Image (cartoon, one colour):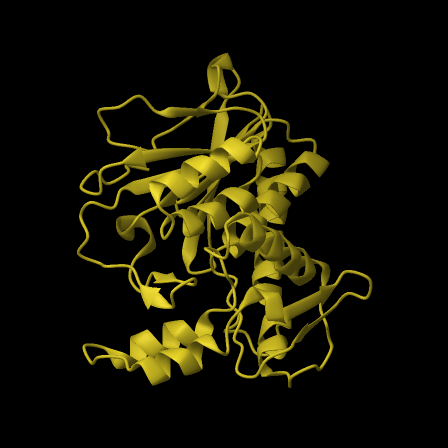
Length: 292
């Protein structure tokens, strides 16, 4: 039986975990160290909190000012645009002004005037990305970009590619348990990598080669869940809203979709899954906390 080695690393305000199936523990260690360094590099380019990062510079730029960005930022910005389109705007990386508005309001009521002003600074359609350069620019004032809903998934995809470059053929990668990616063969030759995405008394989801799942729900994502389409928060006390897990061919997509699914209706989600090949959703009652 080929052993499985487990490694952990702190980045992006969460714990990344990699499980590698290999006869060589030292090789597994070297490969995962390289993968974790890649994740750190991606964080340095994508984090809005890092002065000098691509996203921090873009947020600070003037209207219409072209900012040169690296491949990671360019990839995420373009992928975020694609997800925004297929979700009808339910996923939007430009809603920073809305987050700030509702966070600062606390228990105070937000006026329609303030809400309209914040919404005027949002909108993925007003972010222009040119892959040849690559460059990005904002076309409206006050736009603030946050890749928190897609960055961890992207980091997992890039880490997986690097592991493959190290000739690691079988691995499971996780970002805080909320996004999980697998490739190759699971330990003991199982049909897939078991990932518990629902109540503990249910059978785990089996991830096959190159498949990813991401969790959605207030228990997973926390507070300040804003619907970009209305500019308003989802009701935090709405116990009828289920926890939703998105399954997709890569972690970037499952991560972004799980964020969008939080504000989409069940009918909207089911329609999207029918239209987009390789995308599925699983619904669980909100009182059932996923056990990862």
